[in-house]
Length: 147
Image 1 (cartoon, rainbow, N blue to C red):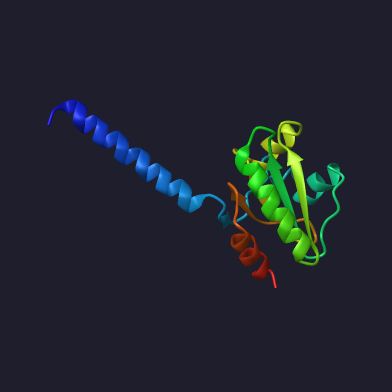
Image 2: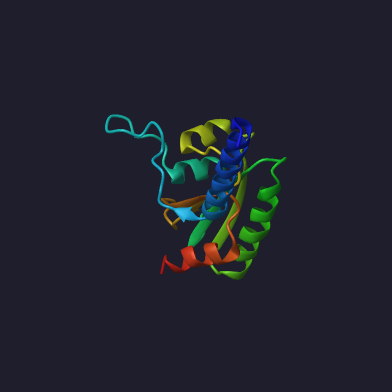
């Protein structure tokens, strides 16, 4: 085989590996994320303060804060899924935040892609977050772990 064929095979394998990783990782909830700027001397804004700054009430059980943009196709799927969960599970509220309009908030929370969903407890503390569009089962499983 010539070198060009090896390069093509390597590129295909790399792209396939990345695609499989993204398919596995997208929409999965994982642990919390430290808010940038929070240290011993000067505590940065908490999730509660940031949500209150947006004028959003917190749910009795959980609040699903979705960061999205207008041009993001997976954001529409996440909006439907999270809205459906909020409508069917008592005490859960879904809030969508336009990432482009709240760039400082996006930077502070360390959001690198849309959609990103942050699950907050009734006090406003971040429980977990998911990058990508989560499925209904993933959201319900994470909510079930709260009780």
